Length: 128
Image 1: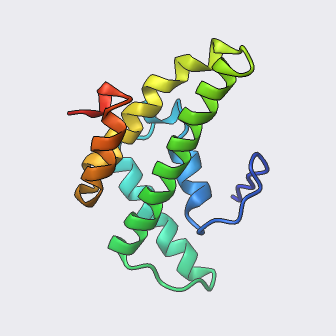
Image 2: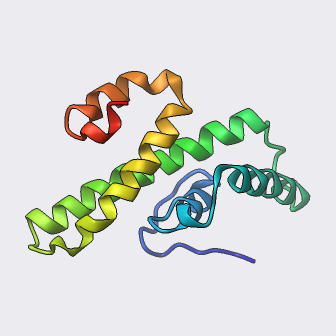
């Protein structure tokens, strides 16, 4: 299986598309953390089998979770933009699950506690 993301067409670290796929606004209903970890391990094995440099599991998690956070930040910003600038409030219903994804990932990245504190000023859901 191959995934090609033409939505943004950005140059990004290799795990970006995986983070996008596993962190979509509805996938948390299907992809729980244990399955997410299994899929990351499978990704690393297949990546190396196809000639990629072996991933250290901690490094893969750090890159993957940073990509997932970046994507989630962008989604929240884009949905607020669509509401306020374009007059399309329908996307706002997807902000709460995206904030849940951000909260989960930030809780697993204690070195980003300062980022969480800044975001919590604007999104009280992240203050926990």
